[in-house]
Amino acid sequence: MTIYRLKAFTGGGGYPLIYINNELVGTLKNGGFDYFRLPVGEYTIVLSNTYPTWTSKNQVWDVKIRERSELFYKVTVGASDNAWVESVMKNVALEELSNLRFSR
Image (cartoon, rainbow, N blue to C red; front, side):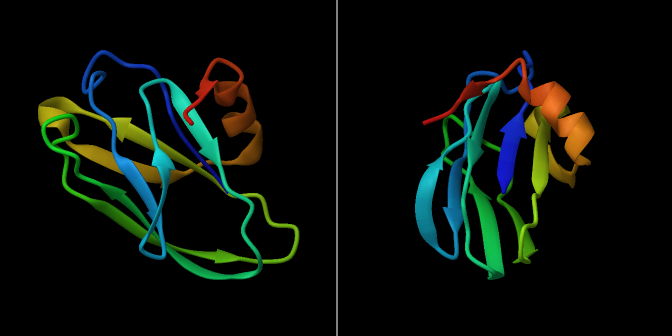
């Protein structure tokens, strides 16, 4: 599973913490991505508010990992630091990821 965020001015200085099933696993920098190799199963992902660096509400979604699944999630920050997460098709994600850096 890959979570990424395109580089943008809006919300650029802030970054959320990434939790998988309540375990802190990383951060998501502006223009960055992180990749997680997860076994088959169900997971809850949280991008957590880290005020003052990330003021958006927590973003929470459930993921079901199946055998050989490749999942890509894009985080976008809009006006007033509102953020949202969307599932992205592999071909689109790979093109966007080519311009990003690893967040860890």
